[in-house]
Length: 102
Image (cartoon, rainbow, N blue to C red):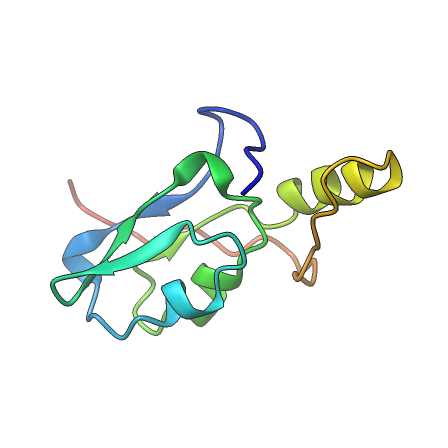
């Protein structure tokens, strides 16, 4: 998979909220999320293109990401003839971050 921008991904995962449905792993086009013992885990953070599919499909808001940033990268790379990544997101207004106490 393509690495987009190392250590700048906006992906936030709250494992305490995860119910283990696996939707994040199913919908992620870059295998960023994986299942491990009935819970999701971030498997390859730097491959996240921030499409937002995981957060949009999580029924309990265990994942948050600022969708759209990685899609621009995918479009630019494709236009330049580099790794032909695809963008599966629909740009919508950014959702508020879920409130979590730490």
